[in-house]
Amino acid sequence: MALLLRNLQRAVPVRRAPLRRRLQLLRAALGVQRFDLAVVCVDNRTIRRLNGVYRARDAPTDVLSFPFHENVKAGELPQPETPDDYNLGDIFLGVEYIFQQCGGEEDYFDVLTVTATHGLCHLLGFTHSTEAEWQKMFQKEKQVLEELSRLTGTRLQPLTRGLF
Image (cartoon, rainbow, N blue to C red; front, side, top):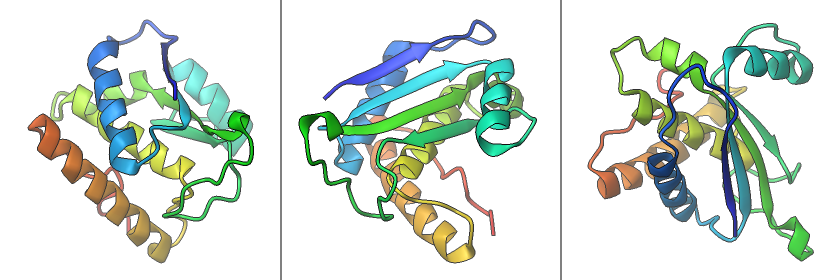
């Protein structure tokens, strides 16, 4: 199914073609290629507004995920009932925030990939509100990023390492 990748900001560069290739590899590693997915790159102002509206936090952030399926259990795929249900949801990447957080110490493109992986895991029911939930999400991110690293020759680490 479709992968929609939009860049709605001009604050930092986004190489869409390589990001799209990595997102396709992520979808394959997670076994969700048959589901639609939207990934939207936004600036600090937009991600801050979304974060305020949906999470009551008046600050920019790296990623916000809006799942199409609300009751997916971590580690399970959605069970679509109709063709229109083959949708995972939307991921908003705060690319300006991510770029600022890298500070030249990490590869921005790699961090974008890791952040998108984190957002995709949220769409699949993973959370990190408790240590047990974090552990499950961390293991999934680690597994997927190891596969992606093997395919791309990178060394990607989960976003939530050291959270608890």
